[in-house]
Length: 169
Image (cartoon, rainbow, N blue to C red; front, side, top):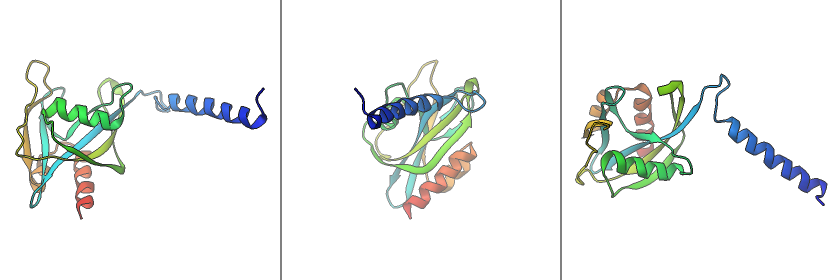
């Protein structure tokens, strides 16, 4: 037999689970795609950032990014995306940038919501980008702040760069 307090807690857990499931769509029934963006940098004397030249679905420069697979944590997704998109095996997740989200409407009219992570690596380690018909990127660049600012395609990536620079202060 459940006591009133135990029953209340059990009901509260059920409601919380339902609310979590409801967050998979927006108020206008747009599907949400949870994802991560990794700002990979090498901070020698001054920071250099890794950006990728996208060729799949659109053309331009971006940070490493990708969706979170079912059952995967955000940090696991960051690691997987860095390995998949760059071949880098040696890197360190420094931190999740709290209060920084990247949101945009993507393919299939889905609302993409990215958590942003700061990741340190070494630009002397070779990058091995995937090849083949389904590749997402054609090349990469380790670039200083001014070059990254001028090359990044999307304003939300440029805003992320500014937040990262604040973190470095």
